[in-house]
Length: 352
Image 1 (cartoon, rainbow, N blue to C red):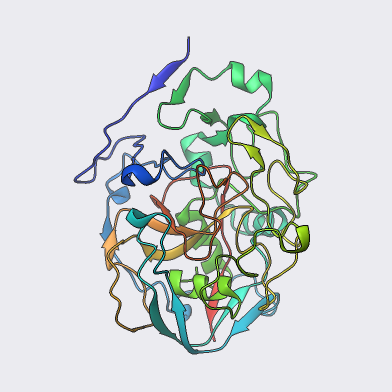
Image 2: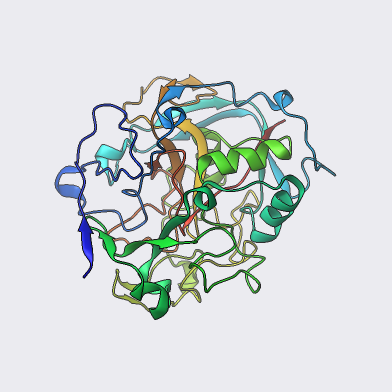
């Protein structure tokens, strides 16, 4: 018998339980997010509760252990004034608006999402153990699991039954104990929490991008466009990103060539030379989550001063317009810093 897990839909303070799944209501605009918005994990330890923001943008705080050329495989985004957000939000409650001006200092950002090969070097050098490994499980989309693994699972999440808690699922076993990454070393790493991503970036002497930096990068020099390349999802009938085709969550036709993740070098880059900035995997940013944004110009904004959730951007291979239309530059979502899932990865940045 499969037990359906149900949880309170409103949390007014930090409740340190093993699992907490939080529904952030979008009124009548959204049924649910198929991309993992509602999968949040809180540790039993006190340290998992909301904490004050720290100066994570100081690149000199951490000396790199492994570094050849800090900005190799990165692109420079020149400092200046840009616009982020939108005055035509699709999910109002997500804080997609208003359109607002930001002034940013110059920074570098990775051309590619961090791959399994990249992350394996980090693990080998530091013996880092991801939070998914420490917890002993992580969340995987049911359509990617073998019958053997699915038959062992006795619980599902009521709000998103296509997400299953899989024992031993981790970055090097994306679908559990009977999976591996031997043929996916060039794919984006997944099952990494915000804390894991921060550890990787610090190891290289880098950091996570702010949400503003990420969004400016996503737009590729274009203003008020939905996607990094424009407003049309399939320009010249060409797939530019890895998302769900078909009827979510029952049928993925994989017209873009992929059911799960894709190599980080696949699909054309945007005009800044950045690949897979939308689709493929969600990407962590450094910002604490907030939805009440000022319309006034901000200089190097870094999000809320503290909070319980971190901002993630870009959507993933599980995004579909009917459920999770968040593969747009202005779209955003959130998870707790210790959350991991099979569609959640990252890329690094560094101040110029």
